[in-house]
Image (cartoon, rainbow, N blue to C red; front, side):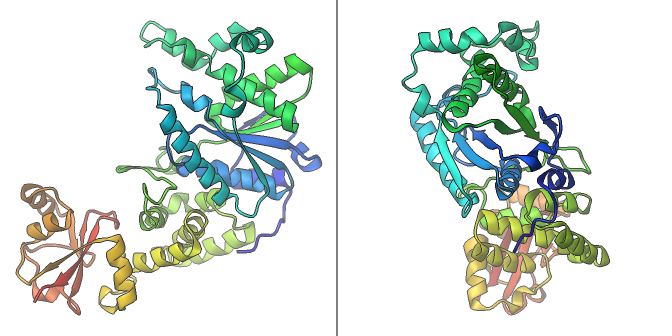
Length: 422
């Protein structure tokens, strides 16, 4: 969908909710001069997730308004692991794993910033040959120990009930501060963009640049994205994180995650996770409020985010399948091409009329055992064609055109296609 700049960047960031902390005395500076900024992700996993995606969207706005992007993948910092927010020492990942994760993250960078001008760098490239004594003498000399000890996570780890902290993790902030200094020297980077959890590490880089050269540098942090209704960190489900990698979270599961967000948060998520402008979002929400049960806003959100992360084709396919799963389209009406896509995404079995529902649950993988299936059925957690099951068997009347949808719980991804056996 075409995007038109109707605001200044500072105004758009505020309207979308991308404001947390910044060292800029006036956000209007973002409108008056061009910044060279950097943003980093450590390859602690082989995929980014929805929390990272929020920051990616913020970066896309900065780029769209003319600021220059350096995107860092932390091949060096990933070998240590950021200790901030961790109650105990991280387990170190093998270098081979870090290398594989780096390739995946770089691939996601290139995909998410397609058609936008970016520079991708890896901090392992400048740390691998850095002499330890030079680092201590030239950099460590300018990083006050008091500043490092004052960090909240250091205090908690060193406290009476803390688990302690290694020299390696303690030094993480020094490594990240050097990143900012190095990028400042090499690419004239003068702004770091980060999530709210990276504020302390980022400030250390600003201070190091000032001490070493007297130059001005700044930090701009985006907020932690939380569910406005529950206050819980957004992007976490009972099954775990929502990943951007289709091998970890399928396009269908990804799409359904967005379709299932609550009404209280959908407008906020539209501002954070899509490029829709104010006029477009106002129109979407107006239609949504007229018929909230149709979930117009959720579908608009899911369409945009899934197209960005997976592709327009996969978003369209996921939308089509989802309409069957939530009952907006009848499974009996699905043509063969659609039925094939449904089978590609969902478990599918054959069952004859009279088959016990518990047996179908086990065969489809929706229950781990007959006893678990019985408990699910007893608790009212099983649905046939979006209607709560009250019988113990699948009856002829449950099939339409020889098909039905069997679901466990309220998550539509936990659905199986059942075709009538002869």
